[in-house]
Length: 246
Image 1: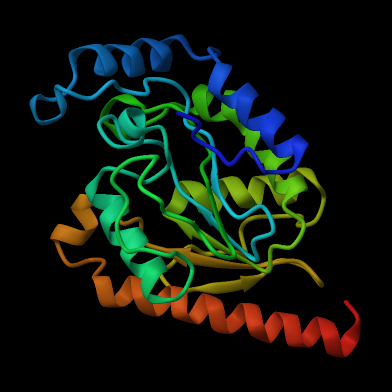
Image 2 (image 1 turned 180 degrees about the vertical axis):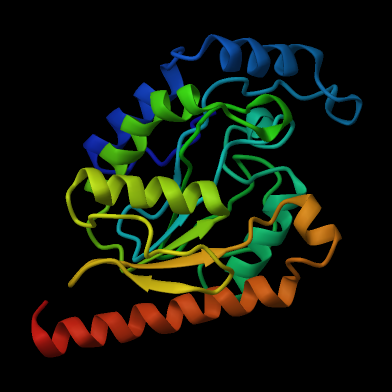
């Protein structure tokens, strides 16, 4: 199984191969491999991926989606981000309904799903216990995200799924000396921030975790409307670039 498109530009293919081979975090390595070995009863016939999960999508995307980390029995099982779990069910349906995906479901890395003008990444590439990476693990994984962000040159809108993705994107901008402080950027569902002239807009979005969707904090309509707004903003930003040349 190849979890990323072999037709990608070489720098992205090389980066994703480095992600897959990473063993920097002993706690995460042990956990992801234990989960892959013991499995969940419903998936006992699966051969789990059990490795760091590479990014997924269109390398020429204008929409970048930043999540958190793979789910133990979702992407850690399938090898593709947001595939095979409830969060992915919510996310890919919304992307399909707003024209960013060719189908509303994502069950395996070989199910034919294609993202159009969208790319999905995460600050942490291994499934963490209780879905909670520790600060050192986030720090170890950060270079992968930074290198990726530098390669995705057409992005106009960044949608951060949850506060960690939001913060990690801003840390990248700080390290590039694009923003001086993160204090002015408040996370909120639907909040839109312009980080710098000519740069992508940053949108906050509640993470489509089962906790958020089962309680109604995030509904299917809310997520669909947010990505519809992201598409509108992309077109507005493109029109501005054509008009001003920036």
